[in-house]
Structures are given as C-alpha cells and as structure tokens.
Length: 137
Image (cartoon, rainbow, N blue to C red; front, side, top):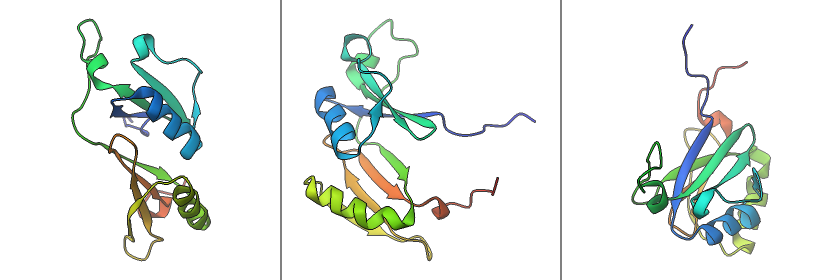
C-alpha cells in the first residue's frame, strides 16, 4: 500500500549559521551529519535519532539555481522526542545554558512539553512520544 512512513527530515531557517550550529551542537547536544557546512554556508544537517534536522540560511536557498528553492520567513517549530524521566535534566540543562523556558504545557494527562526558542526565534519543544497516539509497532 502506498503510504508516507515518517518524516525523514525537517528544516528550520536561521540568519547566523555559525551561531545556530553552536546552539544545536552545544546546548542540545546534536551531532552534525558531517563537519562541513553545505555549499556557500547555505546550511547544516544534524542527526536526531533516525531523522535529520536541517538548518538553512533562507536567503541562500532562494538564490537562482538552488533547486528546489525553498525558505521561510518568520520562526518555525520543531518538537524533539524525549523520555519522560529526562524532563527534569533537560530543564536543568536549558537553565544552565541560559535558555529561557517560555512555557510548559501538558496535553491531557501527559508529562508537560517544554517550549523554548533558539537564537533565531524558532520555537523548540521537548515532548514525550505518548503526546501523540502513535500505533504500537
């Protein structure tokens, strides 16, 4: 049966790629796919479990010859999956790194999602998998 299986990669758009890479590497502990930026410092890729998070400088992705051209204006959103028992350690890590937690919100009786922003204003969320009704595999 023809079906979409999962999201393979997601993109966020940033203005200062070096600053963004430092945040995602040093604050969130993500590992880049490789140590080099894309051509012309257009972007960078991070491994997030079995998926990839792409950071792009939107103005670079809109230049002629970039196929397919893409880019966004304004802040985006990505939710990272964490284990419920890791939430206190994440709160501590974010606070120690000087990252302001903007809100914590519980969906039904689930542990709360933690919302904060990256240096470009993108809204990031730490959430538990049970927030969504994923089928058991």
